[in-house]
Image (cartoon, rainbow, N blue to C red; front, side, top):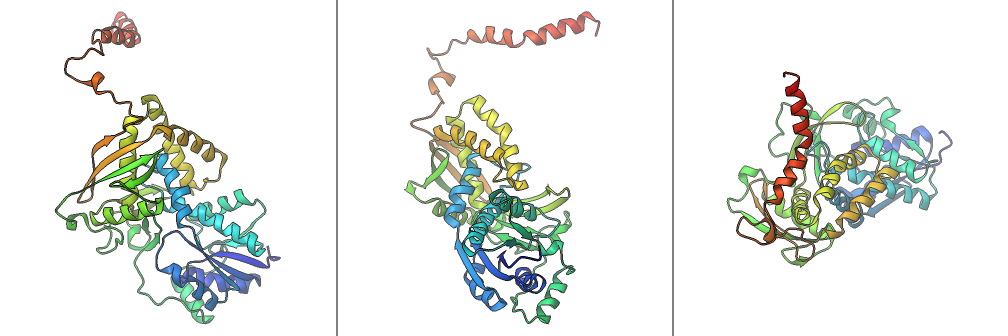
Length: 404
């Protein structure tokens, strides 16, 4: 790969990517285009361009992908009820493929030969970045410094930066790593590597501690059309506005914290701590509307497939034919998911206490009522039960006949 002339680097402006930028120039003799995708990570975006140019980038691209991220990645996953291993709402997993897509657009625009990223050789992100890139352009070259260089950790990176006069952020070192976007913030590494150690006090950024949340409950309504949230408390908003607003509301009530040990795609177990306030509210509200509008067998089939969908996304297969095919199924059954959920938030809890759908509800009060009705003949249940029990009765007779 030594014939590489220009590289698009996924750039954050932090220590790792600042060092990587210089290292690529030294090791490959290539010019580096620093690419920063804004998926809602906050302050680092505003300073990225200036930092990149000061560090020696030939060009700095800052790409606002927030609207596309929520509309085309977060909302499709919510329509699919995608949760990895029962807890994780896939915040980082969903951000990586859109960042990769943006990088590949930058490759095309700048005539670059390769992409580079700062993911380590132990994590999932290296897989997500590279699988997405190869799905878009099978011929792309990838530089992954953490799999190539002899730097072993933060101390080595700092020494390298000082040696090469690389401006690096002067911030207190946190005893864990963070990754943020509009859907969540993830925390891992450092003190969190011991799964018995509780997260440090003051670590969380999006959510207050539930025990310090307001003593008053807050109730809101969320309206859905074809499985997508379109309004909060009757006010229509864009997807980004909805997620941003629910993050603020949920965060104020301590909603959406998860602390899990998950199975990485590369084979090891890893402790991850996440806060996903808006996504957690959307998940519960969406399922509430689905409970009225989806057929039983369709719901059960979807629920069998949702873990597979989540695994595909977690493992980096967003641009795979299987995920895209499964998305078509998920989206097709969402055509009837139109209605409104009423949600109450209280000290970390998301409580569904109402749901309605004027046009697509399959709930029939006249049929389900315990009062007198002329819709359902209860005597019909006897034949239904006898047929359902036929195989059980046959098996029992055979067993008893054998003296069991």
